[in-house]
Length: 567
Image 1 (cartoon, helix red, strand yellow):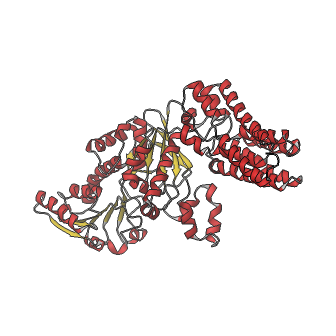
Image 2 (spheres, one colour; image 1 turned 120 degrees about the vertical axis):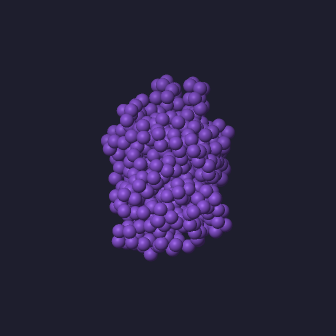
Image 3 (cartoon, one colour; image 1 turned 30 degrees about the vertical axis):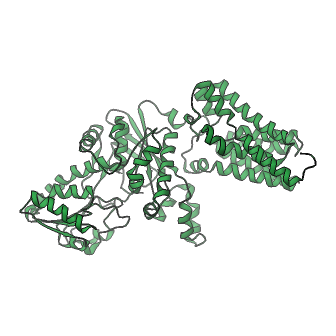
């Protein structure tokens, strides 16, 4: 490119090196040597260590050398042009055209980085000792912390600082700063996991290869119920101060949430199944609030698919959609179609099972406490829904009056007609006004509203309230009504001593039934029992009741004073 305008030469070098830098030499070598598709390698753990486990030392070393040579040769080919170095690294990390053609995974790029530095040194772009400084920083921090992502990020940041301090050209400093920003951005997920304590150190086995045969690994996707829930992971707490001080308006934050990707936020451990195995659940957080999930179904579906892929890549055998994620993509159906390699469930079968199991016991306790069932008035909120109408059918033979409350008056009337034909002596009232609950001795609520629907003025003193809604339908003010009992529905206590760094808001050592279904399905390897779409099979409901009991899961049917609101 001698004699060419420097700006034009840099643009050409950037474009061509990007295309050539994206050639997945290492991935193609692994595929040819092992028969494995590159996507079978965990992209969160790509690198020499991961390839070493999967393909052996010869392939691992050869793959690293190919990446190193790619960086060295391409930079030398463009005579040490720093923008060529940026293009090679960008192409390796984000190989857009090659990813479409070869489905090439994105690696960490440390081999390419070493080759780039060597190429810049050979071409005389900067003194060799300046270009070696990032390598020394990387090696020192890796030896100290054993976190590859942290060491890589530190080495990348060192590069432009060292060049600027030693008086390198503006173009070299600018290109290296862009290269560092690109690399740190690529490491952002791993850096967040380092901060949250969920990233594997060098030498530690990755999740998929590190679990013993007697350990079961599932994954479950949650979402924040409020802005405050965003600050639970340590890696996100820094933003709380910007929001609380008004430096980051909430409207801007909410827009940013729609652009983010899911991340691993923690792990549930300590679950000891009755057959002696240990069960762990990887908690994957999708940073969308309930109203955002409802208002942006396409964005929510994309994020749920990303979460499912992350669960598979980390080695989970099944993936559960929690709270409002269970409504996304036709209740998980399209998410499963997009990621067929892992079993996905919305948890509907075991949720229905827990309700079916709890309602008879609740009626018995109500009667034992002095209530007269055949004279009692029961209200069912959300009666247009499948779960709530199932409750109505269960209690209709036992109560004197039944109030069906929902948003669709015509559907309520049809449902009431169905029940009236079977129970002609039963007084049935339909209403779209939740205030009708104030006459009820027993209240059953199962809506999908993101906000509470039952407040203190809707409940009479002494009433028993069974809250099946997820998020919770019952406002905390209801607990202040004299004599009221609030019983959480769809809450399960796993066996053993469950531990979690993430507060799921279901109380100590308790989980939602949808998460418990993911656990049971994974432990039993009964992936054909996954709940997808709007239909819940009766056979699956019965299956999860029996399987859950055999594994030691306990359905919670008593009020413990703790609100049940999923994260």
